[in-house]
Image (tube, rainbow, N blue to C red; front, top):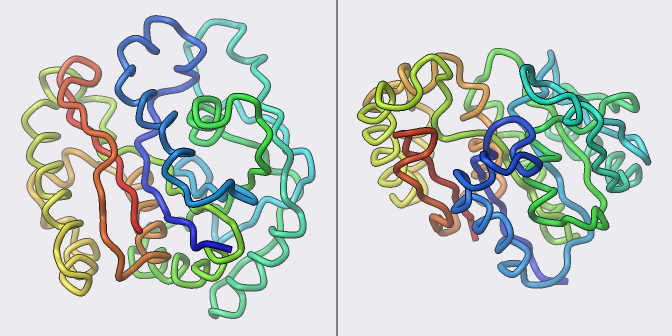
Length: 264
């Protein structure tokens, strides 16, 4: 079995694949997500998502065989609260994942009630529209400690040799109060720093990301880093491997720069 790469993706906004206007605006993102299955060495056994929309006091692991839906957005048309993405869960892999996290000394538990949030079902609708690949999640931990989330990635690394694709799902810019022109300059500055940091040698890359708050416009782009922290886990699981930018758009939402990456 070939080793799978890991990814950090910008997942777009709300239920965008079901909304024609948003889908047109995010056409470059859609193209990049649709291409991910072609970048894999073989069909995945499962997709493990670490989404910025599920956090808690430890690293919880979704264990339902049939995960429900979590409509964690507001202000969208009524039909978007009836969307179904009916990919199967991965209970056996969830137990394996929870054991790996625990073996690394990190707090964790299985969660049979958690459902797919939009950081999962929106990009997965584009990546695997037939919902035929088992999909499950690991939560991020409140407090957003970069080192803990790098450690989570290191703990999850063996799954890559077992057919699991690890995807950190967030956004490289996430300040909903500064969209459009107000976010153009800060998002561009942060994105340029991020690209340089991710393409540095492995030790420098990790050091820079752990100190990400010193990046240009860091706290403007991420007042809270819930959408950046999944990057740490994707990187931790592929710590010494090459970063490739697979998506870049300098005019999202009227001026925002955003990017996605593959590791390995």
